[in-house]
Image: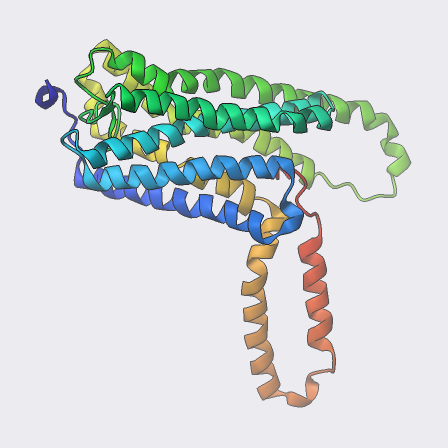
Length: 339
């Protein structure tokens, strides 16, 4: 049965998916790193993003190990890798939805107190449920070699388990389906609330006629609120397609292109979050780029001082540095960085 159903994972697929794992590892690490070094970014929404990044970090590491090994038996390291990736992947689903729920309560219901009170509940559910499911699956001998039926080299639900479809649902798929439904609804409600609030305030805009209009913040926030559920679905849909094809008994699930897309999608969540909430967030991007600009400026100043030493005015570097520091503090990230 295993030989007949086994999906071959080619070297090119391994390389691509390993690169995706590496990017997700770096992206998740960068989100955690920026939260640690900059205390003013330690808001509740960004703290939730860090918990999500921890799950994505574990997923990237465990998936990378599985793709690198491409298991063929129910070995001990196969079970360990499958257990870690199952826990991390399921936890990632829960934290993704938890962040959406927090933003909905905070923005639409206008209750920070209620939103903050949900954090403990988020911890209990987002860590506790995946842990309980994973422990049960391991104890019942459900985690192991799956012949890459709905994976890309890594281990998940054992291919010989008679109730493997049920355990595929419990260890990931049912939570994935719920996220498909929940995320778009919550973010659409958030976007509609924000647009309604902007429209209600439009009658007061003539009072602020002397202020130069700036829509960069709202447009970036609107774009991110749109992209969050779209990117999640685009990344995860390939795994869902292969699962449905497995249920239908179709060999199309073994198509190399589909397998590669599945591997990229399952391992890219950390990289996608980094792009949206670090690289596309101006205050954080400014701080990360500041050392590069400072080094470049220092080299330029040294060259300039050698060429025309008498032109360097006293205090020029100090004032420039103050301007750079002020720039880096402008628009400090508030919340989930949807600016």
